[in-house]
Length: 136
View: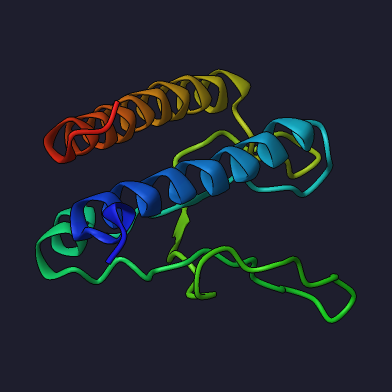
């Protein structure tokens, strides 16, 4: 068993994958801020506490095809998609666009800070394990 196969480290890896995928979705929202008829999207995080406790860390990330014209992207993890979350409460412009750049930038910043926190936790956890084993 590898050190990185521990349930807690698997949960941290899953959280990192979630933040990576969420960053892509938020970047698409910002990129389409002036696209007529575009509605902002977000993804709902899985229950990472349950993953850490129960060891079900194989929840992966994959893209969802909403049109037969879309090209399937590579799956991250085992291909289980995160649940989409409807974003509501925005003012819709006359052209049908419902993206608030201020709100999206706040979400991007929050996502970046969470990603950095989880990265730090992962690195420190590996460092502690290496110290316990006697490696530097």
